[in-house]
Length: 215
Image 1: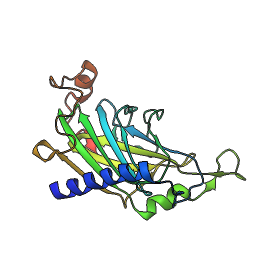
Image 2: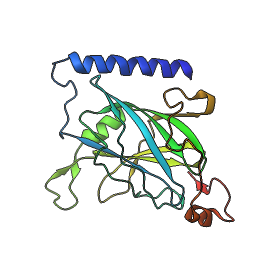
Image 3: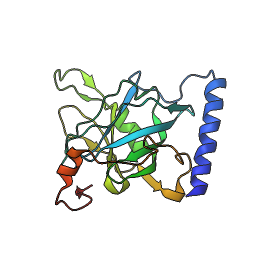
């Protein structure tokens, strides 16, 4: 796992250099100017994302420190149409190749580091049109990605298709580590003094069995 993280770190470094130096046009054409990502959690099982790095398919690396935070209402299992946080800051210009991010699982009282490796299947889904729900003669695109954060460090990824159920990105390779395996996320937390459950969390999990659902 450490070797994979080192390779990713080198890729992000090279991506940052190429992004600054390159003046070549995009090699992966898209029918939209931007795509967006949003985080979601189960109801009353909150998490916070503290740092995110994205390497796109053209080799550009981006770092996000101001991140719109998760919101969610799923109970027991993920919904077919998941609610999620805003995307004011969570946006990118080019198709994603790798996303790595740090997050505090408040319900687990620990820091996780998750890495998402995307495939051609994701890029195809994001660039292939489907009939607009309101105007069937117009094209719409799946340019909203949802990332679910659940107890046990479970991470899921979908694309939103308006008017339909969220589309799971099952080909995405997801790795999550914590504790001594943390690298980029070591010491990165919004809770340096420890985690406390709110009264709402305490009430919700009362007499329920961890991890409070099938995620």
